[in-house]
Image (cartoon, rainbow, N blue to C red; front, side, top):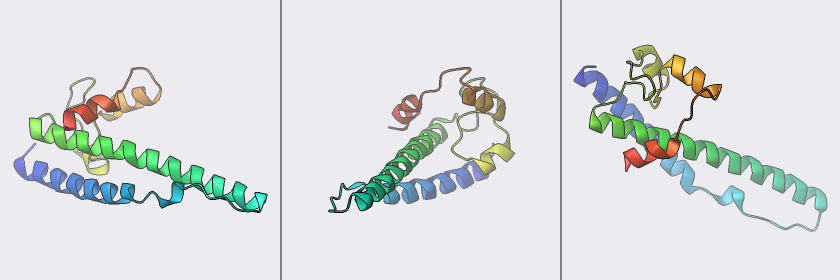
Amino acid sequence: MTKNELAKYKAVLEAKLKELSDALRNREDIAIEKTPDALDEVQLAGERELAIRNLDRESSLLRQVRGALARIADGTYGVCLHCEEDISPKRLNAVPQTAYCITCQEAADRHEFETNDTVEFANAA
């Protein structure tokens, strides 16, 4: 991978990092509100659950982005963490924070091997 390509991916990932960090600071939607109407309370609980799921998804994505930036820093970006083959440029363009080639990602999605987001996060620190 050329220095220009690496710089492009780094810029994209840093922008995503800022966007996610800013979004995760807004946690007003998970506040527990009490209302006298039970129907309103059920609706608020549903909205709160949705907000929590979104925060969880964004936190996971943030860990992936930090992991990708750490791999750029240590020179392993673009190499699959499972099979150690190069990740295709097409996949990196579509999902720059990916840690796996498409074949290994599909296997991970089928739970054929254990992935560990905390390891990627630890590498980013």
